[in-house]
Image 1 (cartoon, rainbow, N blue to C red):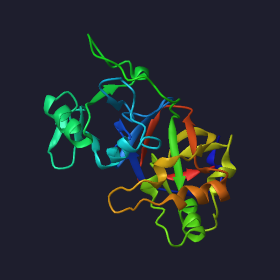
Image 2: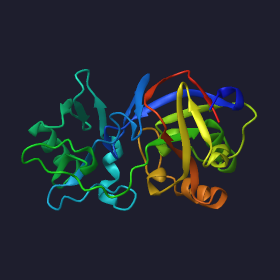
Image 3: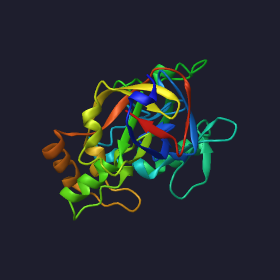
Image 4: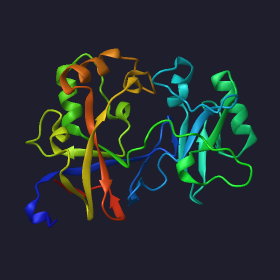
Length: 249
């Protein structure tokens, strides 16, 4: 897969990791990739402590405030969470559970996903409610295209929660990455494959910091992209990527 046979499609502008799914994640400068995706991404879930059911902001109104909660990876590798009005807490801190429960107004816990295998002793897992795709890539071409279609809205890339936000080459237009399905891709020096389009859900429309609730975001993606915007990629080998890396397809 020599890049001499591939076309440069853009440059990595942003990298995002979401240590706790459904929360606002962290922007990072570089990261490690493995066959399962970005190391440290979506390790934990917010759950209803009474039932163990994982947060579902796109379907349940009571969970829509989850996007105002933030998660990050500390320098020692531990995951921390910040609830509005509170400091950052390790995920094991009792004060975090108190803050989450007060914020959501029902008892909320943070649990590792079953697929992580990271629980120990009597710790409880969060049941995977969907098959997690390894790596989510979104281009600026798609965001710009949606803005053209829906000029009164704000299709900020944060609504779509990519791991990799790509500054597309000037000659790319429309929902450009949807044409790359099954194609080999090189992310910096890491070989990968585009495996599927990203089917959008109601999470794209809900309000978050600086963004209003906007149902027309999803309506237009459904109408003009067959509900798809962005793609999922599977790394074919381990390696590191960083901001400024070129991407070839």
